[in-house]
Image (tube, rainbow, N blue to C red; front, top):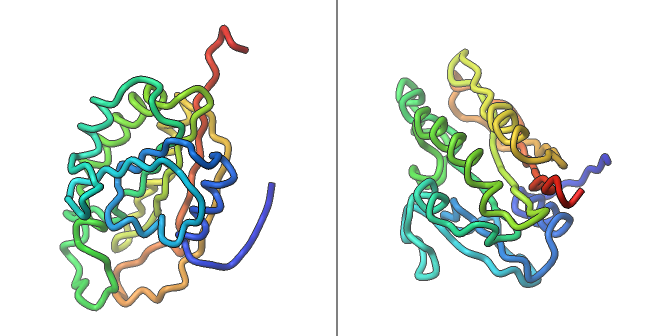
Length: 202
């Protein structure tokens, strides 16, 4: 299926959400932050908000790796993952004061944290999703200097081994990059996976 429209990334996410998950579904957002992806969402989902920071009273303050490990089996219809974009140890070599970034904790993490996340997601996403449950990940590939970091492809490779890839959506970034020697790709990926059916149900 091919489609195209122009809007903000939160609208793109909400269209994807509505296509794959019915209202009243239980959705776990493990990197909720300030909840920007959920802005102006009309319609009801039972949202579980998790973040390493206590950004609001409804947020469960916990590292998502720890939370996923403790979450009950087959307990949610969907999981949303919107991690930081840049590895902090790689970005330090650049003067990024002119760049338009959100809260620092929302856009930076370490490469080791990314690798740990891939292992945790691969292990726990199929476990906590209900049958035919949906996992949506929002990631950005990019260059830091001249080195390419294929984060979206690495996540896709890890998850396609334990879930079924059912959607790839690409959102162009129209914001100007104000750091001339920090090159990034011009799009964000939304990757959608579905829990595989058990063999005895096929």
